[in-house]
Amino acid sequence: MMSNEEWNKKFAKRFKRLLKEKGMNQYEFADAMFMSQTTVSYYATGKRTPSAYTMLLMSEILGCDVEYLIDVKGEEL
Image (cartoon, rainbow, N blue to C red; front, side, top):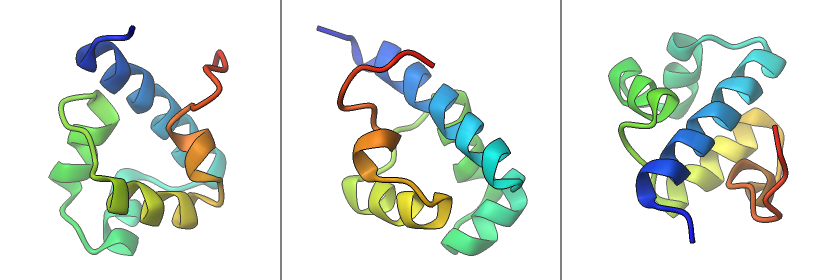
């Protein structure tokens, strides 16, 4: 089983990749999510885990399924 820290790092890596693919920076994403850039930075560095509801909103903005965002299938990046 993956530790919380390992999961956060994996989530951060996938989140940053999706931001890049979408052509968004952290400030633009923060504006779209109505949250601070600091919070987005915490997600992008693995320092904080978003709530399930926040992940749902993130997936909508990033144009992906929540399952992909949280890596349900354990796919390698």
